[in-house]
Amino acid sequence: MGGSNSSRRISVHQALGGGHVADVLLWKKWCGGVVILTSATALWYLFERAGYNFLSFVANVLLLLVIILFFWAKSASLLNRPLPPLPDLEISEELVSVVADELRLWINFALSIARDIAIGRNLKLFLQVAFVLWTVSFIGSFFNFLTLVYIGVLLSLSAPIVYDKYQDHINEKLYVTYRYAQVQYMKLDENVLRKIPLPLNKEKKMQ
Image 1 (cartoon, rainbow, N blue to C red):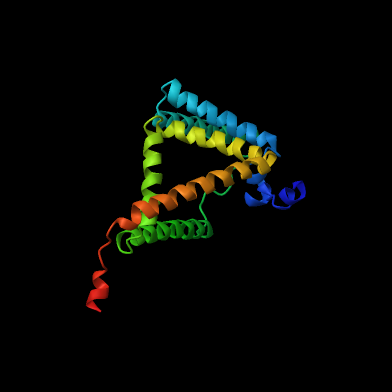
Image 2: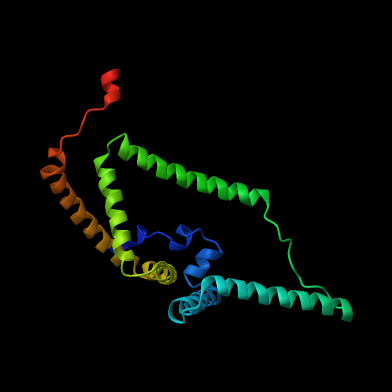
């Protein structure tokens, strides 16, 4: 039993990409995790609890950065010291192309879902999308956007390592939950959804 469970285990590190991000999320590089957690907590406290304005914060940070770089460059020219080690401040065409391609894929995916619901009359997909949107709306009624982002950061730094450690137990509970939800959906489909009359496609009539 234990051998079969271990054979079904997946590598969370590889599932997360196996790079630096995976190392941070699994706390293999704990310095990065500490920096992200500390920064997220500080920003959340500033904007949510201390009432600091986001626009004022960004403007003040940029102003401080500009002042430091300006006086650093001036003092470097006077004292024959090296200039600030700034990289090339430009966005490459390759990066723009990669971001645009990724964004295009997500937009096309959302449009395909909308088409399946509106034209294909996919009732199952419609109920799934409606449930997800209702869940997001319900959760959003308890927290504002900034708090939701902060919760997302906390979950991203805790859920992967917890799942990696207790993967067998979590998979077992998830499978039981999935089977229960599947049975309930089959009952709903048999007793309710199949009894809903769907209009015929007008395009088929014209053909």
